[in-house]
Amino acid sequence: MAALSLALLVTGTLRIGPGDLLAALGAPSGDDLTARVVWRLRLPRVLTAILVGYGLGMAGAAFQTVSRNPLGSPDVIGFTTGAATGAIVQIVLVDSDPLRIAALSLISGLMTALAVLLLARTSGRSEGYRLVLVGIGVGATLSGVNTVFLVMGDLDQSIAAQLWLAGSLNTRTWAHVVPAALGLLVLSPILLGLSRRLALFGMGDDGAAALGVGVERVRTIAVLAAVGMTAIATAAAGPISFVALAAPQLARRLCGTAHIPFLPAGLMGAALLLAADLTSQRMPTDLTLPIGQMTGLLGGAYLLWVLTLRSR
Image (cartoon, rainbow, N blue to C red; front, side, top):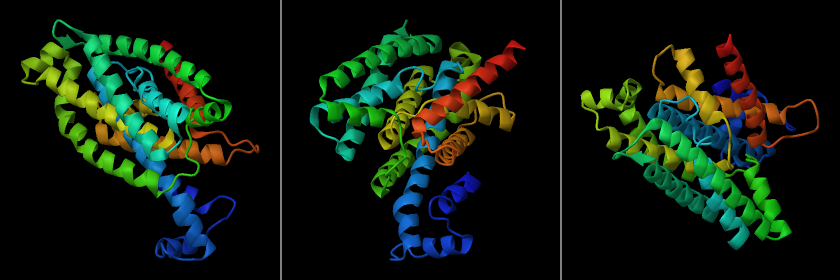
């Protein structure tokens, strides 16, 4: 993650040497070109990528642990789509104010989570496989709703919404970094504090309950915290696919643990998003793909690779 961050800071149209980078980082209010490029353009973009990737990695670890399903990531089971619904409503029906988009995205993401949790309940509890199935159904429904809103808007509003839906780290400023950092600073300790109890979910709900875990309470808190992290990430960079799906599994493989490690999953998510951003910016062609499209391409290839390994 550190190496990728350094590569993104020093390379680009303006190449910056290590010494110039250190001087620029030490002078945030400097007026020279290097300091302005670092502090106004590249550093906010890199920090946004780290925060968004970290949030998605942690959220994916929570969903996969709670559902006991490697497909239990927020982009697969509809929570990312739910967060996107609020943003599209704001863009199409009101305006494109970034703070309002972020706020409505967070609210709609939490409302989607509550709806899925309620619909997934059976016999007084929300089982993992029902959570995934209900989430997929809710996500498909909201995807249709999003399309309706895109058709309702005029051409300029629809284009703005489509650009946001592609997922992007372009033009990210400190106004994106600070709210995301504060939100993740609040929610991350919640998931880390629950990680030991969530690891017992691998034994099944009855097994975890027999060991003293309040299954429904822990599941609800973990899902709401993970949805909050997903909504914060979506508000900061738009819908980013496959990072939440791949990061927890890669972290588990590298750590060699039976359960999904939460902090490594978050760090892996940050590294994956930085790698995707670097790849999209340094492609040999003149085409620069939005970060959401790049993670979709890389994530699809990863999923096919995993399925091929398992079939063998």
